[in-house]
Image 1 (tube, protein in one colour):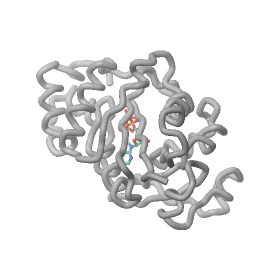
Image 2: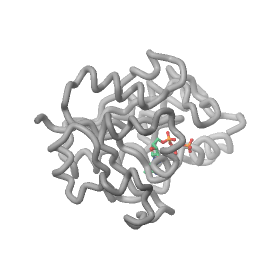
Image 3: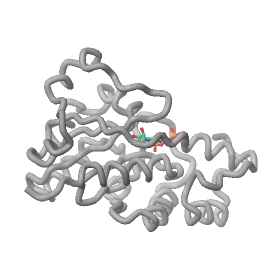
Image 4: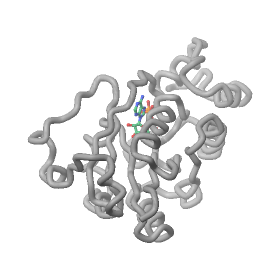
Length: 215
Ligand code: ATP
């Protein structure tokens, strides 16, 4: 079987090092072929992003220039409509046959997974790789939902042996960064250097994104 492909979906309003560094760490730790960064067109679970889809896509493209092994995938923005992850995984599965797919999620996203559209199909289409995030602690096995317990993979190598169906927790270096914090800081004219790639920051400044707005 070929190396697994990672998928990191998000609003990326804007993309920042809290997305990029953990994704790169997972890429290396799990020996993934690449991680696809997939900006959502219309995220179903939250209010509309402030930056446009085109701007968020462009920022993601600028950002991955700093991270070999990360690549932007524009299928959700091209597809339009609500950006259901199940549709994205199904279209990747169609392209990639039985190659292992790993859906990368922050712990906060994992904890809300059961509210996602057709969430039961997600582990049928991909492995689920949960990245730790500051302020969250790893759940004990007995605290996991029933569907997840039997799927726990003890070793990263297990993910390369099947195309989907496993759950794996990957510890990543905590990055205490959120897009909300960045948007708020920019609106208050506070510095955000070091929180996101300089190329993205340059784009935000040139296009006056997040200035004087309700964040
Ligand atoms: P916002 O502040 O607007 O809610 P965000 O910074 O949480 O945005 P999203 O685009 O919602 O970013 O996140 C996409 C994915 O990246 C989610 O799975 C989320 O859990 C994960 N993620 C976001 N920030 C971090 C971080 N600092 N460390 C690890 N994972 C993160």
